[in-house]
Length: 339
Ligand code: AHM
Ligand code: MG
Image (tube, rainbow, N blue to C red):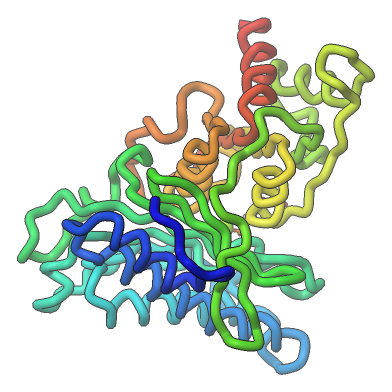
């Protein structure tokens, strides 16, 4: 890639620069990412106000997963849906907050190339206690013919068909990180100019790390191989440099982001009560699997590579294991050992 002749490039400049490297590209993906960046900035403003205004509390409804919906979830959902509906790159969306996918059935949207799946505000149970939360998104090229409304099949593609995926983390600073097949890049919001600026170019997930992230409260409900691996993480062991450090915020975007930068493994296994775990394949596992694989790491559901799973329903859940390559291999070794 030719370099940008400036010290800092904004998200818009970066996506345009990438376009210039591909003269035949239509620019639809770049526009889509810029639309997402705009929604992120609007959500960021509201998230930062959350402690000040009466925006907290249950909205009084229960989402399709049977969980209470907070007001900010709805705000974030509407922002995302709004920018994508009014943009020119997206034919329809699926959201963790909505029962069914939404087809933008109008002339421009029917000619658009992509569908987008997103979790508008992940970890929203943490809003009340001022812990980082995030937005996660996943972009697929539609398989239905252009010129017509998109269809259910467009949304139920295996994760390996994603062309881009990313997340926004509303933390001590606000960041947008996105991956295309060309790489993973992170942008930090410069509040003074209201722009995402490239701060983490070409992110690579360290080959190994010393952090493991899992809900220990469920330990006795995990399968044997996973329990054995967690035991190993806590032991002093010359071969793996243990004991590892346990870090679990309970806000997946923050947990996976930290591990992606520092090296580590994040696990949300199935439990005896919930064999498929908690996380959703389409809104949480697929995008993070794509980002992590592009960055050099691995992601599986314990049986197969996440990106190979053929989804059957929009809201299906999946066990999820993601992180640094050698830590994932060590985990797989423990699964093999008890087969
Ligand atoms: P949500 O989509 O309802 O916010 O739930 C997803 C979140 C993840 O961010 C996090 O990793 C997980 O739930 C934590 O769950 P648990 O409290 O069961 O460990
Ligand atoms: Mg979520």
